Image (spheres, rainbow, N blue to C red):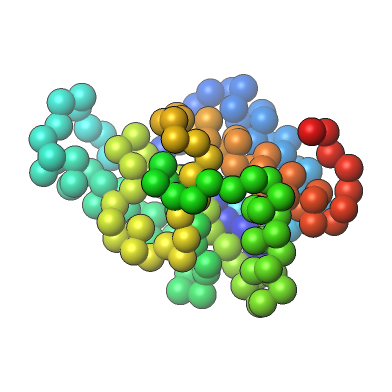
Length: 159
């Protein structure tokens, strides 16, 4: 299976990089993982709604340019469906069983994802009703994908 994580913005925090690298290394024995960062659009704090839309559109276009036509897309969005780790594992296993070998998880920037990205997505996934920093979300996501493969393979992993 080929898993792509497309996220907005460059990861700067060393502790997050180290965690993502560790889980990516662990995950590499189960799937090919490709971490893709697209540049975030610089924007001042006080944006009008129109300006926010422009920023999200530019970031959305960058995201979509990285996703193949045959890729199953899962957008991380606060309004998405919440799942347990076991449900995520089951869903990934079903995708693999039915020939969906390319999956992209998409993490938006600080303003969220543009409607074009949401429309391209095959499903929307939420990890919490709380807003989480998008860079921290990447670490949590990689860990949960790794956990899902451990569940699929019936291998032990801490609870």
